[in-house]
Length: 287
Ligand SMILES: NC(=O)c1ccc[n+]([C@@H]2O[C@H](COP(=O)([O-])OP(=O)(O)OC[C@H]3O[C@@H](n4cnc5c(N)ncnc54)[C@H](OP(=O)(O)O)[C@@H]3O)[C@@H](O)[C@H]2O)c1
Image 1: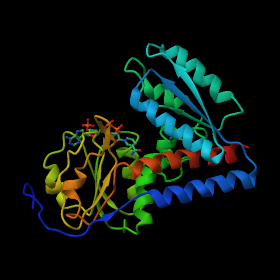
Image 2: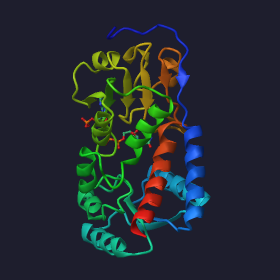
Image 3: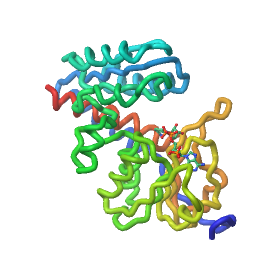
């Protein structure tokens, strides 16, 4: 089936995250009220990336809705590594906050791994410090990374069988592909991790039960990448003019696969939800 158009028509299930997101937010709000806690998330925001500005705004708004204070620590685009390192060390020591994240990407002049690894693993609510990623391999991190957790949560919500499933993940970054590989293995899936140097990508995706697309290229994947039984998870968030779209050409693929996530309305919302969940859990851990 590789290389040719999949013209099999079927009715695709749209795997929206709306219900899971709203339920999750309501549960968190009740938990915060019931435990009478005041969770706080501190965001280290370096530079002036416009997309990051939008994402941070979503985190502030969602946090506000349920009683999580979100504080932003801003640094100039030309901030020096030492300046940010010193601040993170200070923020780490504060008793007022429970979660700390470095908003990615950081300017290329900085060493992002050094910054992330400074965060106390209990406060590392993105779950991507070397300690949490190491613990993830043993399936016991303080916090699971937010986007991969969103992928697994959504698949479970729609009762997509993971045990024994062949899953193709197209991404090897530390926020998506690498942690997702381990989380899927922990669910007894068989995982093929692909990237820009992978040969015969279409052959691999066509043989997979589930394909997770996260390459950051708008509408890159058309129906020829999938078969009629594929579940397609689109993690990509891209902007064309003022429109947000995923890595998958939704209109082309819709009704030619078993299920597909919409963008927006898919994994993005769950990433924010899981960040807030981790912040509440950090608050309970540290109190
Ligand atoms: N929904 C959410 O909440 C959420 C969260 C995080 C990220 N995202 C989105 O997910 C996408 C990826 O984010 P990221 O930070 O992980 O980006 P990234 O670090 O740039 O990683 C992109 C990955 O895609 C691979 N890739 C690029 N072009 C490819 C191609 N033509 N064929 C196969 N693989 C290819 C790259 O391979 P190499 O490693 O070989 O370069 C890399 O592994 C972006 O659109 C981002 O906005 C969404």
